[in-house]
Image 1 (spheres, rainbow, N blue to C red):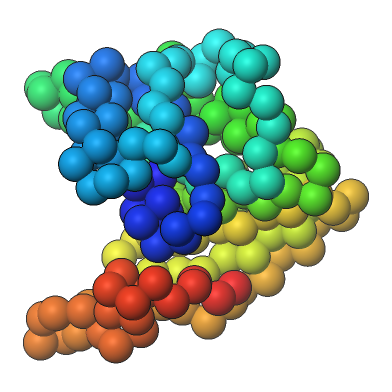
Image 2 (cartoon, rainbow, N blue to C red):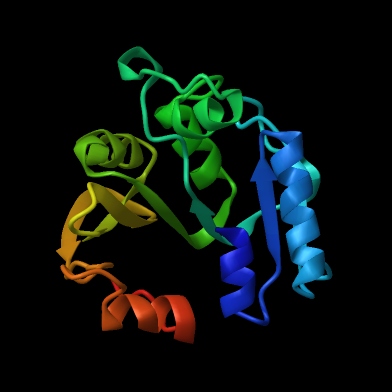
Length: 187
């Protein structure tokens, strides 16, 4: 996610947080190969622990946490895939607490997650004081993009969906605009 952002927004700097050292190394090599090593830093860290203070605060946090609660999951036998898809050392509540805690005042949290966990996500965000929540569905996938900002009361807005694939295959024009032409995702 961070490398895509750095590619699309040429004047941003990205600090990626990755649990798995091999994947962190892959991300670093990818940033170097694509001429972004000066703007992309990858840190190996477990979200179950507080972020290192040296990282500071951010204007934006974009996150792709594991989608499946450990109690409801049938994890892959491949440990790397299991860690990427099933909550382990940090559940969704912890993940959101760390993500919102890393933001500057007025900052924005953007995440992708399963639509069947949207109520849980908005409930956690509301308790954390991040009640300005906009949701963009990604049909036909059971995923949602969630954008949150600080607000004392929960204000949930459903935004127009972003359909990624044409029925006959291939990306829709809207998806192509985002993926290939750096168009912003509008909430």
